[in-house]
Length: 87
Length: 85
Image (cartoon, rainbow over all chains, first blue to last red; front, side, top):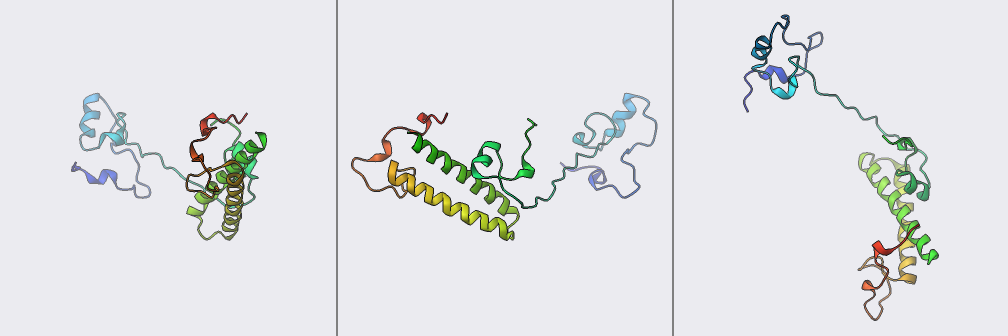
């Protein structure tokens, strides 16, 4: 799908605010008018442009390992990955 | 029967740790300690499997179980019939 306004998806420059429309949001017409060029997955239907969640993964360090029997029971061989709480 | 079960459990535990280390090494190929752990676990795993297969029959159809008559692969217990409790 060609985006009328490709700028919407480039990363924000420092100091640039996420909220595209500076004007006060007065009514649905205004909100929908502004949304014309913005892909819906970005606005999630709320008018303000939300940046998708940023995930991060901490780099795993090797260390002590559980013994095989303990690893099988705990579900991982790495102590720092083990969490007894049902996430 | 419980000797057989304990050997099976040990094989499962060893294989689990081998897979864990495999996944770790995929992202840390240069980690010497993990590599050493992996190869020792792998050797232990093969020894445990061979020992099991020699005494109780094939765990793998193309494994190291001694050739037997009749065809041992279809003998009981089948994997899902084994009670581990």
